[in-house]
Length: 257
Ligand SMILES: Nc1nc2c(c(=O)[nH]1)N[C@H]1C(S)=C(S)[C@@H](COP(=O)(O)O)O[C@H]1N2
Ligand SMILES: [Mo]
Image (cartoon, rainbow, N blue to C red; front, side, top):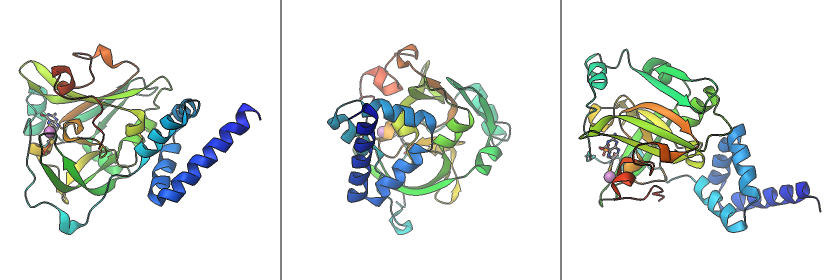
């Protein structure tokens, strides 16, 4: 058997497993497969062992989605309840009319995209449960732009391994930031949310945009995102562990649920 045909066989098995366990899972995989970079990441994964492949399939599964009647009447806030950089405060005073999201790093075509242009892109709405590591949960509806569309538009480099989210709030002198790998970046429920519960995203919940990465815990859901940077090396940012709380040493980088 050639290496190629064994690849095909393995891929068919993976697909069959996906169909068997959940049609939703397959839909998730198809959305990820749209992207050449993600496909090449998968090809690397295919040369790994079966346990690793199973792990990848599990990570493609969708987080549970709920009904409008399940939305929590009160959604707690945690951490910062506003950005605090001078730049952010200026944008907030202007209702974010002149705010632009920067997408750069390992991309062929960096973007500076305003809120209206972001909202004009295809959007996804989802009602999901937010789980904070401190032991509380709440359900809300989030509406926003799937991250994969932005990465595709910016022409993510095949060298990219992680996506870093730079936020407009800092704890003392240390800015909040977070990062995810490409499996989560291309997950169909990973969105940059600009809407919450059929309204525009309020400042206390992260306006103008916050990350929703639904298969991970609350601290990964970066609020006040100003810049998205693709990289192959997390150690060069701040404390080097890929996120504010990770650097502090309190929480793990991968917070899968
Ligand atoms: N920029 C920024 N993002 C952040 C935080 C923060 O302090 N700053 N806190 C995190 C934590 S621990 C949680 S539980 C959620 C809280 O989101 P909420 O305030 O919308 O409930 O945001 C996460 N994202
Ligand atoms: Mo949290």
